[in-house]
Length: 177
Image (tube, rainbow, N blue to C red; front, side):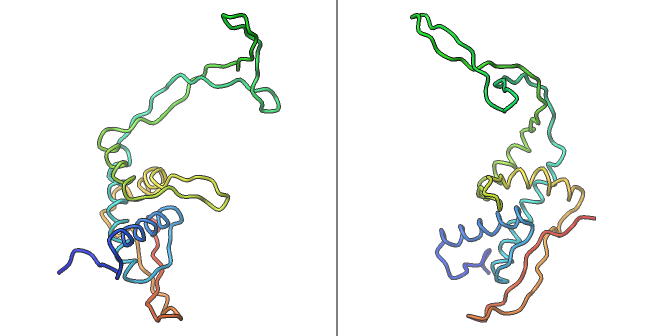
């Protein structure tokens, strides 16, 4: 008995299909695909969500000093005149110091995030902004399922595809109670 389905594709193509579908599932919450692909994606997604749920509170916060460019009322950087050692004039960006609170992951959470990076691709939303699915997984989905032991996704059959009569379904992440 095989440990995975081959899906009629070469290894590299099959892995890319499954990674794309898993990334889309994490980012959008649901994906429409064939039943066999959905079952494979479900295995991958359940493992990722389990690791994110186990590491939900495994971080500390730290206050750091941040240097940022000073901006005027129009949002442009404020420049000041300066002289180099050779006597040349140039413009220098004025900077201001502030404190910022950042999240510092514990080693086990960091390792889990790196394992998720090996599976998930970077994604874009409707407005063409870059999204990091690992952040979505660990900051939104993981804490939602903290305390659950499985069953994070469900497959809803939708019928057959018109062209080749393949069984289609919607794979979605369920709402945690």
